[in-house]
Length: 453
Image (cartoon, rainbow, N blue to C red; front, side, top):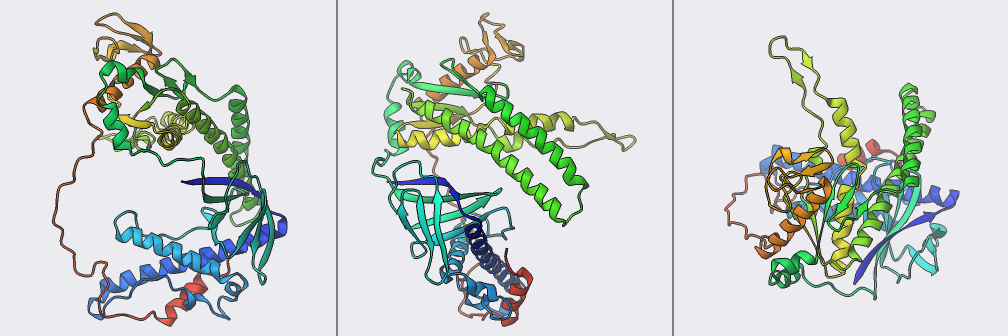
């Protein structure tokens, strides 16, 4: 079974310079193909009778001895792989799986795809990268498990840190059972048996995850202190950044320091999410239940409030909402569910999401729902008198909902209704009339992008 892995890489100064050049050339080809795609789509809409060009993965039109001589200083496989990546994104768009490919900006998605002609694993933690004509050298990386040599790797750079990621055949992993098959077996159990093997977690800001078994997951004291110190340093650098001149080297240096600090904070949160998900999956529970929270909607800024009489803008609580949004995003809500899902799948366990409506106001004993049941951290049912911690009660409610979700068969996917759609004239299709690429376009794209860095 295929397994993915990402390792920290430690290139030398000269190796980092060459890899940065490879990344820049790959980004140039990708962006040129995106510009070419946008041109032909616009051309097909405005000149319907002239036909439409076939969008493919050709890239030789962007290589020019005068305009782009730097493209001849890297292996041709780098350019080919970048064009293939664009074509894969374009095919996903045609199938309705994603939006059309967009331009990549320097510093956002810096990566280069290397196929097996460009690398070779020579020893544990060592990769020889390059060809005889374009050698990079032996790249050191932190190998923390046994691996088999993959067919391709991705070398990436983020906030000054280098990484090597790839997929490899892992003999220790067996193919997981289908999710529907596991849920079908669980649906035959009675509610008491299913509830006993179900775990539910209520996510919050103060306690990141409160389990139905009473266990509470949160960052360690040292991790919280480390991120707090980093936050103070980042704010100081952000104030400095606001005073610096745009385009200056000192401003770029400050931006890199801020990105490095933010990356370190994200690594702490990511490590917490991985450790938490591993503890959950290694437990004897078979089902893990979470609320189906719309985190993107929950962290939106509030709409402006305007006085109808005077037209003046009124306070809308944006500052307080910004603090709440920051706390939500720092609580790893999404990553905890994401990591638990794929790890549970490998262990032949399931993760389900249930609706979160009134989970903090519903009594887990009698089912009574009222806004008066909860007061801060305490839960006291006004109907039966049950008292408990509010998060513990909410997790118990979610566990009962998860068991009912499986027994009632709500996990079964509904069949989509058949619909008839009509393709508009000028939409994406391959006509018989083929339009050749204009040479001026290729030169314009190359000059506009310039030499990569």
